[in-house]
Length: 331
Image (cartoon, rainbow, N blue to C red; front, side, top):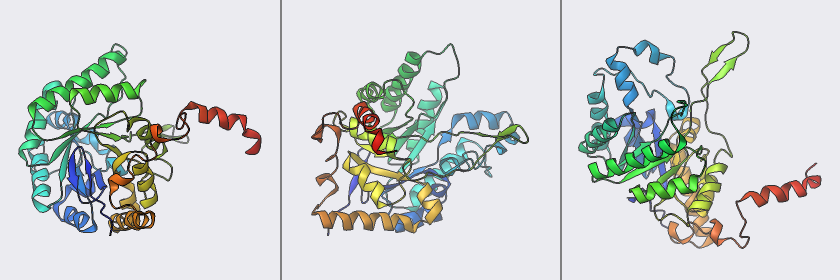
C-alpha cells in the first residue's frame, strides 16, 4: 500500500491532512478524535495579542459580536475560566499532552515584543512548531507597503532567533508581489508557508442598514487561488508549501499536492462532514496513488508545478487572454 507520510514546515507527519486553526483543536478530547481519524497534525487556534490587550482593558463585551464569524475564526475570543495568555498556554499544553501527532501553535501579535515573547511562551508548552498568522488589514495610510513587508521579515527573523522549533507563516494573497515576499521571508528563516489566510468579511443588512456578521464555510473552488500560487512558487522555494481554503475532499487535496503542496489544511470540511472526513480524504489519496502507481507523496508532489508544464505560460496571465480569444465557444 502507498505511504501518505508528508510534512508541514519541515515537521514530519503520517498524513498530509492538517487540521487548521479552529475551535476543534482547542479541546483535548476533540484533538484525540482528530488524531484517531488520521490527522497528520493539529494547529491550535491563534493566540491574539489584541485579544489579551482588550481583556486587560475589560472590553469583553466588545468581543462578543465577533465570535463565530466563520469556520476558521470560530471562538477566536472565547471566554475562559482563567482569562489571558496563561489560559491559552495552558490549553495548548493540554492538547499537546493529549495526542502523539505534531501540534503547532498559532500566533498573531501586534507588537514586536509580543511576537517574540509569546513565541517563547508557546515553545515552552512543548509544541512541535509555530505558525505565524499574518492576519491584518493595513488601514493606516501613513504605513507604506514596504514598511509592512519589512516588518514581517523582521518578525520572522526575530522569532526564529528566539525559538528553536520550526516556524511557518500563514499568508494572505493580498500582496503586490507575492513571489518576492515569500522569497524574502524564506531568506529570513521561514520554514514554510500556508496559502492562504481566510479574512473576516462582514456583510451588510440592507433593511436595518447595519453591519451583518456572517458565518461562512469554504466552498468548492475556493482553493483555486492557492493552487495557482503554489504551482508558481513550489519550484522557487526550498521550504514546503501548504494549501488552505476549499480543501473539502481527497480530489482537492490531490490537486494541491500535484502542483507542489506537501500538505493541506482542512477546517470547513470537518464542520460540514464531521471528523471522519479526514479518514475519507486519506483513503481517497491512497486509492488514487495506488491507481496511479505512486508509492509516496514525494513521487507526485510538484509534478504539475509551473516549471514542469509543457506550456511555459501555464498558470499565468496568457491563459486568461487565451480564454478571451476563445470566448465565442463559451457563449
